[in-house]
Length: 68
Image (cartoon, rainbow, N blue to C red; front, side):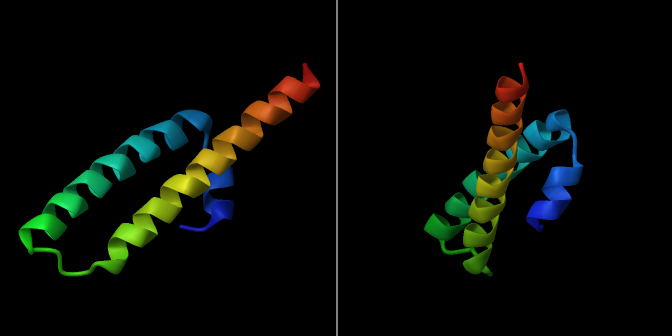
């Protein structure tokens, strides 16, 4: 997903999506260790999506703190 798609989501949706992606990361790592991972590049994609969500949430909290 692109950063713009995350910016359009609400904070609650982002937190939920982040949890889903962290679980997916765990599952992908387990698959990698057991030799069953079909697409190793998926781990990188998921990690970057988590980082984008973290950045979006951080920006929102900073903007709320600045406006308060």
